Amino acid sequence: MVWWLEILAQFVTSTGLAVFSIFLFWAYTLAFGRTYTKLLSAALAVALLAIAAFPHGASFAVSQQALLKDGSEFLLLVADALGVISAVLIASFFFNPGRLFDEA
Image (cartoon, rainbow, N blue to C red; front, side):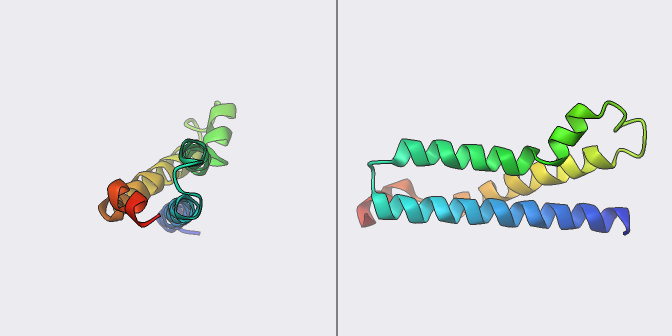
């Protein structure tokens, strides 16, 4: 596979997973109201960190030779992280916490 196509696919995949996690968080927050907001926020943070860090972040951290070879693990890790950051930025345009609790 072409290296840039693999990185682009990883970016799109991590962005999609992060957006799905954020929408799932919004749905649960609407369903349960303010009761479990802190617990759900912690679960969302863990999910987003897991999307950004695994499997390429763990592989990069364990393998000390990743930068000495072709650096693909590092580039995939960066693609994962940028995908999560992009999803959070996109979601922030649509999220209004005040409106969320007014509707619940």
